[in-house]
Amino acid sequence: MRGEKWLGALHERNFRLYFLGQLTSAIGTGMTPVALSFAVLALRHASASEVGAVLTAQTVPLVVFLLVGGVVGDRFGRRRVMLSADVLRASAETALGAWIVFGHPPFWGFLLLPALVGTGTAFFMPALTGLIPQIVSGERLTQANALNGLTFSIGAIIGPSVAGVIVATASPGWAILADALSYVLSVCSLAALRLGPVTEATSDSFYGQLRRGWREFWARTWLWAIVAAFSVANMAMMAPYLVLGAVISKESLGGATAWGTILGAEGAGAVLGGVAMLRLRFSRPLVAAALSLLVWPYPLLSLAYRAPVPVIVIGSFLGGAAFAIFDTQWQTTMQREVPREVLSRVSAYDWFGSLVLLPLGYAIVGPVASVLGIHAVFIIGSAYLLVAVAVILFIPSVRQMRAGTGAT
Figure 1 (cartoon, rainbow, N blue to C red):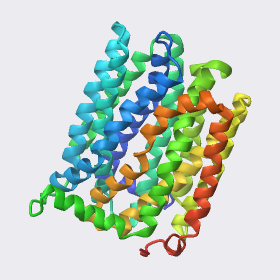
Figure 2 (figure 1 turned 90 degrees about the horizontal axis):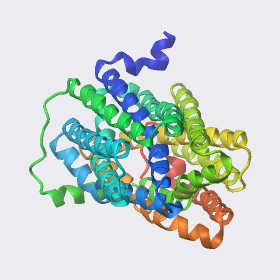
Figure 3 (figure 1 turned 30 degrees about the horizontal axis):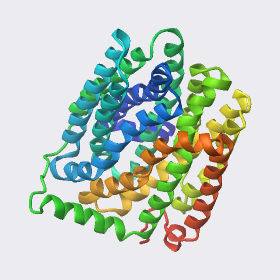
């Protein structure tokens, strides 16, 4: 049946509940970058450096606690960890949103409360990677990862677009409060899952489990090499995109509505890529994943040269589709090739490596752009991405990895 081929994972109760909760949460999360950036830019004398500082404040604890989150997820149960993380994130977003709506938070408030959100995310994301194989059958794993990616993609369409309207007509605080509510709904969906009993790993110490995760991560060349390459890419490419994109939109493209439209187009492209991945299967998943990212210089350079908004939107749309293809292939390969009992820990090393340089990127992009110029920053990021993809494709285990087979 056609519906079974496309959406079979949703026929399974646990995954269906998870999907609905994460879709709601993703829509709320998609509102936050626009709302937070323009809440900061509304402060007196705020600039790209202040926006970068707030994003850094959210990302630093995410990086710091990721490895702890991976061990905790494997040791004490992924759902339990995800529930606790969502409660923390909902509380922090409620406090920040209410503060913006009913008061005038000082700059330190924009640093502290997003840092709590980043801490919750550090525990949530490694546990999520490990949870998905527990709530869907093995033959539907690729499909489940595509659908999981679709939740973030749909959120990336609806969230920024709605946030842009709310910011333009009311207050960024209301968008942040909506995100807080979405975390509450995620808590409800996770609590309703029916899982088997949790086996707590108590034989090894915390550091012993952390070392086991590292050994599994380092034993797979394709894994650590791709993580290392895109660690730098996130600093050189994504940090400028998120920080300078908001600034360019405010100065030259029409403000929050334009930036929300651009980010929404990225989400729309990710939906298209995610839908395609419900049916597409690549025999060489990592090669397909790497090649998909070659479209990203287009949105970067179109922003740098302040192209008309429709031109930037097209580039953002293609970039979103590329991310969806990459993420589905990457997550499915990791879930199939890494032993399930250490999957959250290995995922934590993946997240840690990918994000460790991102706070530095957020912190320096404003000063660097003021010295080199926005054009130069985006050209450097684009050039690095092209080189990184070429290097990755030269790695034998990347080329040799086949769908459903191992290559270390």
